[in-house]
Length: 352
Image 1 (spheres, rainbow, N blue to C red):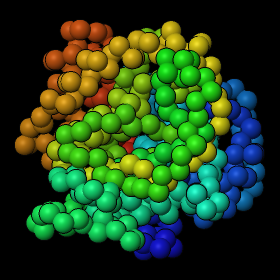
Image 2: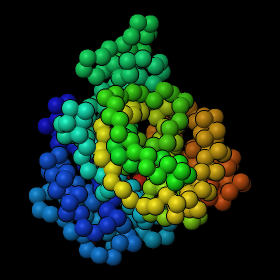
Image 3: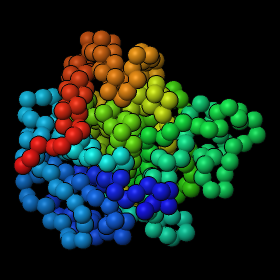
Image 4: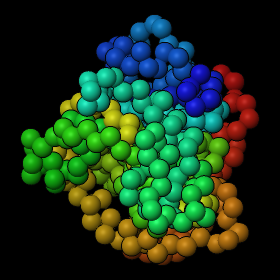
């Protein structure tokens, strides 16, 4: 039982497996994850069998399961780290914690092991305050409150639906930055959580996030694929695009997004120089993508995450589709995803 009265049975931990031997990874996380149900999704391009130690309650999904549940004739691709989204689809829990297989538990500034599940659930189960910024950050954390001048009419906040954790060691820089500063590492542990203000965009990373599946699950979709896309973080854009869609959805539905704690420790993976050519297309795309999302307003008739996601897809097709075929394909994938979610994202899953 969480300290916030969230039952362990309400939580799924989703892990996308890009390499076969998960022994060290799983053993590192055992003190934290052994209480919860885990969903491990194997990268469809990974041929070797997964090596997973005992001591966990888990389900493992592979390409065969993806084909069985989703089918093969759609525009959604679950390769690379996008395989984690299949875990979001098949989960039936209210809360999902998602962490990548190149991360291990971090320690705080006192040397204590960080329980990312408890901290993510603390973020999700306390209100967010997107409509007026509190200069002491999250006023619902122990030892904090609202500052002088904060309107009392806004102090009840809104439900928080997305918690974006951070990581120590290898930070989420893009390939140009990491190539220019190859020795740059994040060593600063900042003991803070803040609500992202309404209207502000952010580049969400799927490395370490948690969300309320019931309120925004259908908005998390691996829709945007680069023409020359790889597997490692620098070579993908699907989670950045997904985060922008989710933030617009949360703003419209009056739901909150928090960023900050909890931290994980991210190990080295990939080569920034080799990733430059693959990611550069995405770097350029962001110059068109961000203004689009900043100005996007959804119709009042959109009252669910599914409604919002379809409205975003239509706007993407109408306003961005002419400039790049990638946007047209993304809009198509978003529409397909809502249909898949309606069919496979609720109720019993197809039997093996």
